[in-house]
Length: 383
Image (cartoon, rainbow, N blue to C red):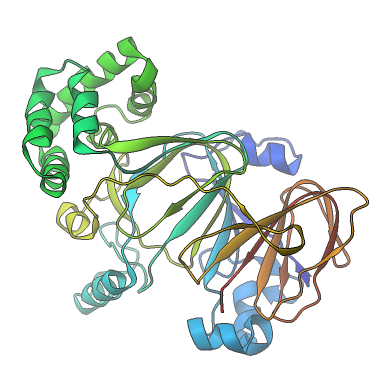
């Protein structure tokens, strides 16, 4: 077992206080958006033995186990994060595995530099993800039913939104959602900016169900993503609740602190709420145009006090333990690699004492006994 030293990413949308408060340190005044735990080459965790990606590269089977290497290759297939949103993240979707492979190969063949601002695919992997709230957490996830979206837009009383309302009423579900999102993202920039400004003013005035969109518009004035966001389900998670985001599902995190786990990929196609590149044709190829229930997840009771967040993905498995002082130690030894993260209280993992925000890497087969009085998240794979 190795204690991890992890990088905090200072993205502009990050909270200035949430991660420092969890870690029990003074804020720097700068946004602290994500703390990465894993072997992603962009910010690998550090061990006394070296960086985690270097340690795994040196002996994949010893670190990951034969089953994980056979199933996922010689790399850690997940990335674990603390995510602290102080402002809305970009409205985005992720490709499925086949789309990612095709998109990556196409951009490689065309010679698009990997760091080019208009590049869509940084790797050939999909990026399903799960966010579990540590505080009240607001987000957008999946399309509303067209009728609900039409009612929300119509309630603003903005004349330039009426064509979108009419489309949502007139077309079958898939066609309605596709045509309206396409129209919003392809509209004349100045005309759409004026529409968003008028819609934002109406949302401020009306409050209630419109309050989240008024807040989004304050962060992204004139951005067509403000209107696109109204096509999506608004979700409020309570601590311990989670959302699973599969391929093609548009989503955005708005505010709050959570534990996020994802397949080890950086493939993002943006729909709005960002100054970054929006590739509308490629986006429309990836998005699943269907109304969905956001499907708020609550942990399922497992063996020995483990609470499991069930997902259809094998690259990651997230669970948690809520430990009470004096309770029996749990043995988490497994044939797969694990990262253990304390988020509350004080937890003993092997020989390490973990405070909130501290984590360890447990190689496949490594002894992993936990005890204490606090909350511990366990990230591993299904292999």
